[in-house]
Structures are given as structure tokens and as C-alpha cells.
Length: 117
Image (cartoon, rainbow, N blue to C red; front, side, top):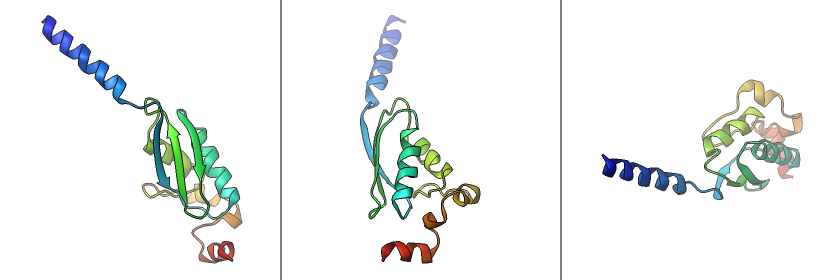
């Protein structure tokens, strides 16, 4: 019985330390302008456990530093989708997308073309 408890204690300790408090990851997030950048970064950084969120307008890459003990990429993606931006894994609802500024309608080909010129 003592051996079983010891093994369980070691396993729990290992699991606790296996999670990184400064995990780095990136995800693709759709958007077209600096207003999108502000909205995306704000949604990510307001997620408990996110320490840094920087979105690149040209590449659509969101670089993150976060505490894996407090959050994960799925949760961060949900927060971003909730403010109207699609990720590779999750598409924003029509209601959330409708709240973005008209110049930020990244699903509209004409808006995307306007930002590329």
C-alpha cells in the first residue's frame, strides 16, 4: 500500500511539473487591419493565463505566451471567435462576426482587396 501511494505521489508531481507556465504557441487568426489586431490581441490577453499576444496583420499569425496550467489554445481560440474572428480550428458565429467594424469584414472579398491596395 505504501508503494502504491508513493508511486501515485511521484506521478502527480510529474504531471504538475509537465505543464509549462511560459508555453509558446501560435495560431492563424483571420483579420485585415490594425483595428482587427487590437481586437484579437485584447481578446487573447484577457484570457486568464495569457501573458503575451501579438498578431501580425500580414501573416495573420498570433504568437502567444501563456500558462498551460491556467488555459489552453482551445480556450484562447474561443475567446477570439467570441469577438468575431475565425481561427483555423474555430469559426466565429454570425452574431459575433456581425459585431466587427465594416472595414474589418475579412470574409468580404472587396474589403480584403481594399486592404491589400
